[in-house]
Image (tube, rainbow, N blue to C red; front, side):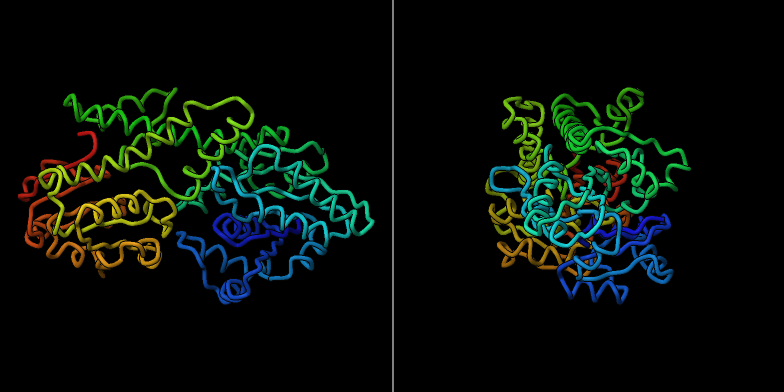
Length: 443
């Protein structure tokens, strides 16, 4: 058992802290937001993540998981400190490290014995050395020379399945130059080690690169199948058949070969931009990543064009009402960060449409993310409430409850029989059998 401080109770910090406690460690989660900490102490989870509430409740009751605003006190009593704060994109596309620096300096100002400091946040290559420098500067101000090690231990969590991803990972990456720090990290993840989870032990720079390279490749894979889908529409091919056959190749794999309106969320857009910036900074441009970013933006715009074309072409959206099902960038999350839905909704309104929107998890976030066009939006109370009186239905997020809608009822509620399935979750024949005109991606 290792005593751990996890600094930051956002998506990565809270999932990591709860799951590390579930591994048998003693974990104190720290945040500088008193309201959030009080809510967590009361069992209220601030993010939508299936199963997380159960893990938090179990470990809080067992005394392995605690919450506090006292960073200094937690750092002094624990032997490991995970940095899990946000690294939002700066104006130039690079990762903004101001929160990481702030925490590193607070650690240096508080620690009084050997400490392993773990970068859990997604950070650019070279950040671990910066963290080490910031801590040393704060120790120097106190005229102290306390030993510590910095480890890069990137997360690979998918929103909507983060608990499963943390407790059953494909690999655990440990970047460190210290044998003692590596041993402590293995103790932390001991339960995974016993389950034969692969460990990748490497240096700091490689560990930091692994995270960016992984996300960039997955973003590229999504963008590739989207571009293949667009071509399939032109030549009369079915992208789902193409993706199924391509994915059967063991060298390629079937995951992330599902066409749609483009990737979004908290990781892929931010991390591809940051990696492209790193390439430019080191005079080693990543042309594939740069192209992926541009192609993903085009894909979102193509979806707006597709909807307008379905109505009849340029100018046909003026005065039309469209039902939108799905605001979150993917199902099983309330996260709308860089969601394709934002671009598409803004594009439809700009072309004269009014919207009726519904999402099972993201309605609260949608209210402020779509503030710029709120005068043209009705926030519905359910799927059929959104559809009633609209001229078309557009599915943007493949929530399970959207996969088995009453198509006959939809036909009755719509004023025009237009059904845009931008996630390919329906079969053309079943939609057309209900009297609806069907539009999909790549079929």
